[in-house]
Length: 436
Image (tube, rainbow, N blue to C red; front, side):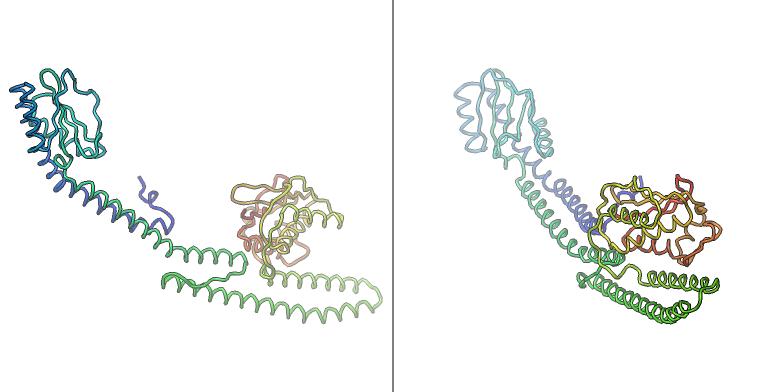
């Protein structure tokens, strides 16, 4: 058996196991030693004494089984032996035994009675809380003895078990509360890191032990550095984009004033291509940090993409979309993600379909096309920024190779991923996986 499979995976369960398991082992050892060396020895002596008294009273009665002798024996047993004795004429010993909750009770008394009595006997340690019922078969009936429980067993056993159980429950409760308070700041830190990775705003205060506080402070400092880096990158690209748009605008005006010619038409196309490249650079630099997540329907968002393509004269089959795919995300980022995938598919295929699927953990939007596809060995390369994959995708004629990279970045910022595989249409299937 693999011991690793038996070890809990969570920090709370492991910490609880580290505290509770040694204490439980110690208590079991203490309990065993107590019952073996103290309780059982004391109870054995008490049971032997009680069994000897029962055997003596039985012998006194069998030696003279008269009513007068029985009355004298009864008075003597009650006064000096703390035994209640009664003769049941014509009675038989019960056939069914009533077993004690603690087997040591029955085992100790049975051993003592077997060593002291020659007659058949029966006893019950469970019917009465303060007495032990012992019955001995004699000629003409049954002698019934009721002995005080403290005459037969050591009374400290139950008290010891009660205290031990109470201490265990108290210790376990304190351990659970203490460990819970220590683990909760770590859970909040892990949740904050996960939400920050999805681009959500994180407000976290250091709490817990000194080590957890240090980790929280390190995370907050890292968050601030990442946000400053993103802001600097965005501002830089925005400035570059703004600075480049000014001369591009002047070029467009100059070309507009020039008489039409093949050269001027090509120059206009080059300027438009440069503007598209600037837009892609800026979109990639901004990432997914400019909007807050909201509740949205991914199926409705996909149908909006289909309607936008229809207005541009392109047909996309969306019959495979579910009626509703509720999730939480950034609408603009997700729409840009799906738009990039659809535009990429429309650039290289005649037939493009949008479909969806869902399981317990995630929802999927699938974009299928009948284009040339991508070699499986180049799936990872295709998701890198500025990767064009010329041989695989028939010479990407526009853009700078950021379409799939932007889509992948949007999916990752929502805690999902982009999956590339072979489509049933013969081309490429790109699936956007988002957690439920």
